[in-house]
Image (spheres, protein in one colour):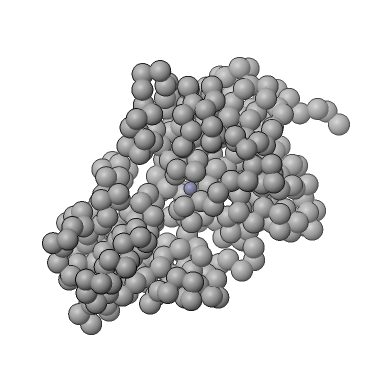
Length: 334
Ligand SMILES: [Zn+2]
């Protein structure tokens, strides 16, 4: 068998493509890196040179303004337009996850390696539709790589979010949606606000709204939450604010997450409403992504990596979990 022209090392510092000295979502200072998207567990390092989509770089600058010193070079990659790097071709392709998210295709001597970053296959509420790329080697996440994870479509999730908010407000209580600052929070706020429901969001979410608006998602009337916020407004806040809000008045809590698909999620989340919607792929979406890639080698780098790799091997794929070498933290935006 011909030796592939690209060697991948999975380390605690991140994923390194040896021959072209490129790190994928590194967690430690490196020379040259690709950021798949702006979630903190993927774009937290401080590489000297970073490629990412322009939107991801914008979000990265908002989140980590201190890292954008003059000695750091941030280079935008547009979807589908390759650049040359150390004898290889790097091309960004859309990944449905948060705005700006992208897969990276690295091509050398006709051999193609694709790193997905985080993604789902179905259309998200806010974000692009994933494009499947044929490749020889696929490095894919598996946050929800077990058959128990089935999620609502964006249309169903939208309906459930609005029903919960409207019913809660009709009962005279405040609907509270718990979300992480980047991604889910903006999706929920967009659904509520465009349906005419007065909405306030946590300041950590509010600062990202202009980037979402630049992508075409509107937030009419959305205000940052403050102690003076009227209780008749729907709230989208970080989970840490729950106790504070419950002490201030009558609230009902909705948990919009992939983890809401678990049978014991209600107990775990102590939520009034569970809405199983995620910006990650469900189990069947992961299988579809793997099949569409046509890859002869598959590396699983996140979540249920060992069991998902086992399932893939049972289906005849050459698959391995790379998490043991990497031991990454769970993604905050699941
Ligand atoms: Zn993510």
